[in-house]
Amino acid sequence: MSIKLPLQRLLRAHTSSLHISYARIAPLRHRFIHTATGPKINSMEAAALKSQEEYVISGDIRIIERFWEVPLDYETGEEKIRLFGRIAVPIAKEKENLPTVLYLQGGPGFECSFPKSHPLTQYVLDKGYQILYLDQRGTGLSSPISAETVVKRGPDIYSQARWLSLFRADSIVKDCEAVRQSLLGSKEKVEDRKWTLIGQSFGGFVAVHYLSTHPEGLKEVFTTGGMPPLVDHPDDVYKALYERVSERNVIYYKKFPNDIRRVRDIIRYLSLNEILMPDGGHLTPRRFLQLGLNFGSFGGIDGIHAIVLRAAYELEHLGDFSHKLLVIIEGQQSFDANLLYAILHESIYCQQKPSVWSANRVLKQFEEFHYEKMLEQDDGVPIFFTGEMVYPWMFDDYSQLRKLKPVAEHIAQIGDWPRLYDTAKLQENKVPVNSAIYVDDMYVDFDLARKTAKSIGNHKVFITNTMMHDAVRANCFEVMGELFKLSKRVEG
Image (cartoon, rainbow, N blue to C red; front, side, top):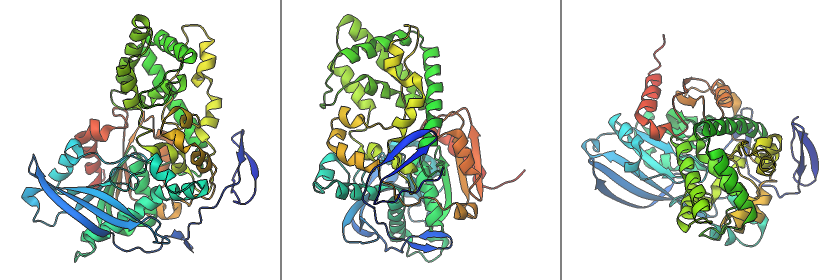
């Protein structure tokens, strides 16, 4: 059923037999120029360079740190924000006209790590590039968002939501284009003014939006675990992802069968006791089960077993959880430190439709994830961990998210999100695109990713069931080696 939400009245609709109640909301009022091929973003000026400093690190790599100034809203240009990025350049080649790679970090809401700590840096430099790690707006040093910065926007929830809506992929791509023009816009040759993208996970979603809106700035695109589903609404995404998470739970309990009893004991204890986290949040059964978010990364299952084993040991021998264990659990859950990851998570799938807490609604179809019901079963029945989903109750259990509960509720009802993908333009795409798609990816569904891949012109795909979602780190040289082979476009 196709649903389009008028913004000034109440609608009720059914999507996949789930009842959705659309609340009254304020429009985002994004301005677009409409053409026959879809929305065309108004042109923008180059980002203004505000400061720069550089130094040398081991491996004879020069790091250049830059701050730029760009509009918060490219349609009005009234308020400015800062962007931060680090460029890694091999000293031996810094005098050469090296092509530039822009790395698009996964998320949403996560900053880039230091170049030396990412294996991609050395791989890219060895290939003859320089690489820019740009903190996406609202993360790292790019005008980072916190509960305090949101509250400072004023008490009006509509204003807070309007502001946060400017931190999606559409604005990130405009930032990238402004920075590209600042760095490369003055080069003599047109090809030298373009750069290459490497997008991991959500970074791949951003890259596909880039292909939809500003392909003229791109020389080539690589994505790893980052083919976005071309949907208007996330319900079908979460149906598929719950099935993937369920599969990972089966693998977990098959490897660690004794954890069935341990997890049941832990959840039973948490159901009967109020556990305060070091930062003021609450460790509830549902929050503990969110540790399953790590099931889809290399070594993630083993890491969760280690936490379960420690928690079960402490309950048996100490009768409670230690401060150290609670700190370990906090360290595995980044929602309070990366607020956009929770606030805008479902909106990355929304195009002119609201999410209305999609993951929470779809969860009703999967009984194995309802710990209350599972506790009523025999002790041999496992309680399943959840995955990369955001729920309304998180804005009670997490100390920083709690401060943003009203605006989170409002954002879940926003129904006029601008379109992110121009399917006609993607089909006609001429920019070489090379993507790694993982068969067992728990975060980006394999079937949906393949469907998108077939919708993008000039696209080559490397498919594997031997790597996990974080292969760009865990198997960097292997996965990037396969993608660079594809980039040669050798047929046969």
